[in-house]
Length: 374
Image 1 (cartoon, rainbow, N blue to C red):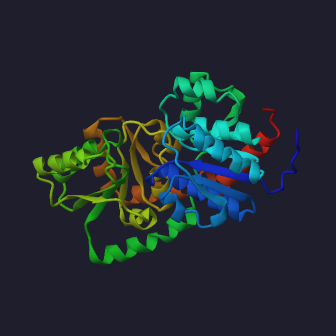
Image 2 (cartoon, rainbow, N blue to C red):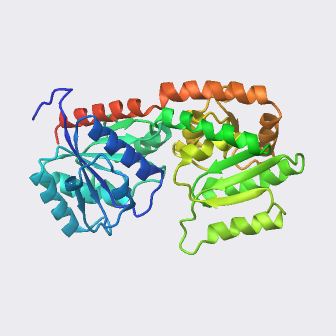
């Protein structure tokens, strides 16, 4: 078995078949770019016309291979990928999407590389994964809740599972605060916002109903919902538009769609809300905290892991619209409390969720993987 010094560069292949950008895909792009800047030879396997092609700015173009990854049992693509792994002497194959896991496993085995997986969600893996992932050497869970779910399934040995929270560029979100100062001079309405793809699990309906309750008590608040509807025919957005119309909130609640640079949007909020029914981590919560926006969140798995209730944010029961509205009103009515929570949250993010901390922990997982027998 080869031994690698802890400061040596590694050859790492990132695999992702996603055709749309989401939190997991942005995490992959940040990770790949960060590893490349730290001197590692980073490669990527993507589907043709992947949106990640434009995001991997620090990865050399010749290190990116495009191939069809239509399903988990695409043997032809797996064999092509295995040849790519062997030809480039790649040491770590890292997959981020469940449908890519079997393909990555076959490519790693045939190519003589170690297989590392990241699990971004709480959904259980399938029987196919139990059969194909026996040679996985490390599984990175983005939260302790995800790690516990993996352990409960029993597919991987517990010692192979490591929790590494997603990290962010804290300074980028702090700099975005300048936008808020500009807005305050021209618009005196308080702004409450949320960010997340439009889907029932994200709780936009509860957010709108809470907005109706807040608006019945205050006329100086507007509500922003940022996020894309990824459903095939747009039924989620249409349902939210209908609810906004039924509650006569057309002048108070705005659906602004996909936002490319969240770092510039978040600091324009006076309060950030995460009303999710379930959340494996909650990257947008961390980003809001970094941007100096006090947070109210439901007690989802990820939010409970990120927020110290009453210190770095406020937590309310999942699905309790009135508790959510009450927390929003209380924070909007108390600027001193918003400032206290904001300051605590920014310190906590820098200590626990910095990008550098995530990179270092991932590097350590890779190096441990290279020292682990197949």
